[in-house]
View 1 (spheres, rainbow, N blue to C red):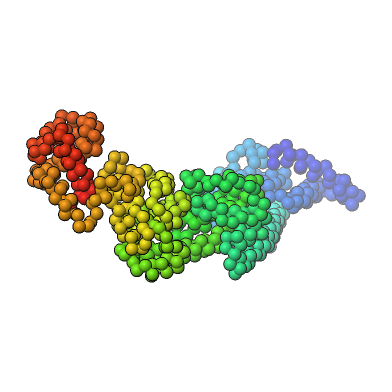
View 2 (spheres, rainbow, N blue to C red):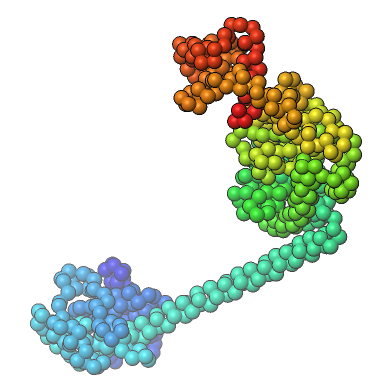
Length: 593
């Protein structure tokens, strides 16, 4: 409190005394000392009313110290409060109360105050004079001491006022502490009530959420019992969310839908965009938003199997809809994984059948096994083989071949043979565009397809397979190396079958290329390969040199060595023709020579 406010308060105390006491105050009969004591006691009473009106501790202590010079003519030196068994200086008297002087220093304050053992008593200041410690007490015990000083000991009646002021201050401090505890208790109680209400709200929300989840489980369980597949799952999601629903496979093909799904074009979605969407969804644990839809992924062993999409252009779907979508995706995963396991079992049966057909299977048993897996083996067939550079003939590649064949309308049996995919295709041999379709599926044009001859019976399938492999090998040695070659396009290469004439073919090749082959083996050169590339490019020096990645002069030197080693003239028609035929046969048959 400022000095002006304190002076005004004291003046108010003195001014209201006669009006408050009225006719009952015997002011005329009081002596001078009595009037002074009455005024002091009245000031103590007014101070009590002020202290007990809910003020904090620091203001109560300051009021007490400010009142000391008015009541006693003494100096307030501070308050030492007892906390945890130790005395600590709580407040410093205002400069107004000290008359502008600094507070006196109590020598060994802890020792002196402790020695009082809770009683009031004299204390000693470093500056000398009289000092007194008045105990600030409450029903709970000693709270601390109010320290005052004077040049000489005051009369006993002034000491009584010190005692009265200390008792009043202690009571006010006790009252302030009680009020603080009440407020703290009220805050704790209010906080506890708020926490209880929050817990009740959370429990209510949890119960409602559990009810919604139970409904989701019940609806999806009913769908699994009715064995409705994707259509049942789509209908269940629409029932649970109220949003139009689409169920698609991993490639974006529509499997089922429910609700007012807006019409969409029948064109297949862009494969690259669909694959990007699948990868984005795989990175997330829950549904994702994509172009006005909430998309949930059905996955199995880290691979996407399909998706369920909620048509939600306004983004109204919340946590409940997401929960229903996630559990529906789990149901769809089980459905599609089961279907895939059946398809894999059928695929194994198909591959085993193809293996037997290529090695010469019994016709009767082959027809029955083909019928069991849904393929009609009766009627014309032919064998087609496919091989891609840098791509192993694994399940992924076979899956791409199967999709490409299906997309081209080929009804076939698919299997793996070495590093090739083999199809036993129903119908007559023709270039059906399988190469381009497979290039699109694989994402690379670097591959070749070979097509064998027509098979009228099961016994002819091994021969068609042999021809398809030969056609593939010829394509690999041709220019360009990528594309499709049919058995009918082999021409001269058709004599290279493994039959009774194979010995004559070998003799022919040795007659025209034997010297060059032996020279290459002895000296580690590649004269036969150089000659083959020379013929592939029609005798053009620049194209041949570029294909061999050598200089034109190097090519000229090699051709000269070929003439010298073989003893053949490249500009003579018969020699040139026979050498070209021999190199073609050598390319197809390879190490056989």
